[in-house]
Image (cartoon, rainbow, N blue to C red; front, side, top):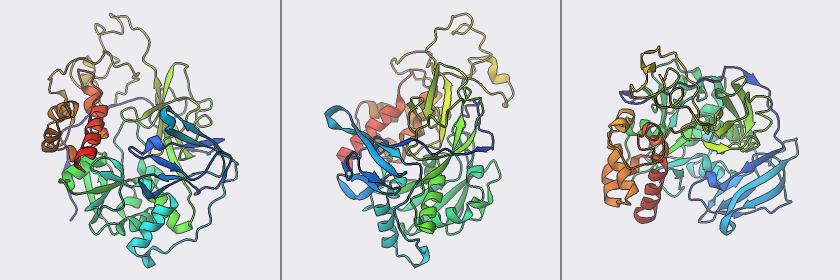
Length: 454
């Protein structure tokens, strides 16, 4: 039975630089990077070595402690280097592309004729499995766990996020095939949750074999954690798997064509982008060609992902495995005169969740050019009630963060650590008066739970 949820808490950060619904011609990257660091707690065991020739779909490494989970190259070429860090930890595998994009040969499969175990084996062996993430812990799903449900969010509400209605328009067959594959992985329900404030694309409205839900409200309405909490909450001992909507289509593409074709439509966004728009890119692609002649100023920060949860990269860096956008905003390392740009300024160009600045009276259509300056440094916790205003869970966010900071396992369990992921606290981190890196604290808490309680 479908559910409709309306949130009362949250915050929409209105930034300049939303992508126009125009797609540019994709360019084959000169290199790609598959980074084990994108997969939390995963320790890679290499299958290839430097100089080896690979195709799109060739297995590069697998999980040392769960060898059935494979990670594949998204492009054809040769292994340029295996970059290692401290204690020889593998940081990334660089592939120099050949510009041709040849694929590992696999025959297309008729999902209706495949058993549940055959679908699981196909996804594990092909390198598709890492698209499945597991709650609790927010890590790559453990194939030995039985999920009570699988959640797919049909929209992203984060700042400047890509519009999935545009991205997946006309990809009904691929998306439906992906949903059919997911339904084979659970005896429970596959939930597809749409934005209750806008009209969803026919790709989502015509989906079959799933429970269609709607959720409306400010960010984080599009976060799958918010949807799980309000539609089918997680209890201790239960597991829920989640998949990004665009990745559902990639899974379906594999089963329809037999090709490990990892082309995503990504949004190029931010106030420092000349022409914010959409473009096609391989997972792990070098972003230098995408950003070519697009950045309008020098002192900028390039982010793989959105401004709340994304990863800082260089202008010749690489798109992370789970990200659907690139954001470029001003770097906030410039000194600001206290009376004109600092805390004594009128603040007509500043955005705030509280009514500190007069911009709260401006129309909601007003958008802001914000930089990365946090306007302060970390300090002792100040109880202001700001976290509770933007956290739409029936959970006490301040108390849970304190429990995570103090390694209080019983406190974390009682306060709902099994339901949350770091991204669910991104807004809390943004509005935190104490400038605490709350997402890092929640991740530390989840890691402790993983080692002591799972």
